[in-house]
Length: 178
Image (cartoon, rainbow, N blue to C red; front, side, top):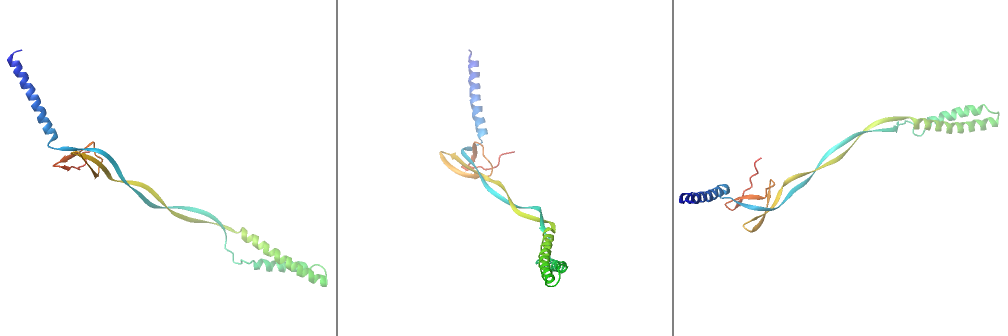
């Protein structure tokens, strides 16, 4: 090997080492990094109310004007009394009239009751209640980091990578470029 080749190799090695140092200096740009040890998402439970309504069909008895069924009782008693009066004569006729009126009154009352109970109508009612939609809102991230051999904890708006940039001893919290 000649001297110029040795000199060329020496200069090449020196330039490569110097270039690496310069490149390291430019890449680092005077910035240190804190090592991320743990990241925990911080969330808040949200409960949002909303009203849920539905139409419910109900069959009900129509309102009655004669709740005690007086009309049915009276009409039944009159008809029963007239029919009872047709039976027998003398005192037997009087007894048959009274018995016919009593039986007719009861029968008329029951006929009116059955008619009222069967007189139905359908109505639609709107039934509503409050339901709750559950969700979670992300508040940030609790990050445990190590810098200069000491641990610290900080809340960040975004999830960090494995390191956090440090400049002049301060953590840099800018969001990553998207």
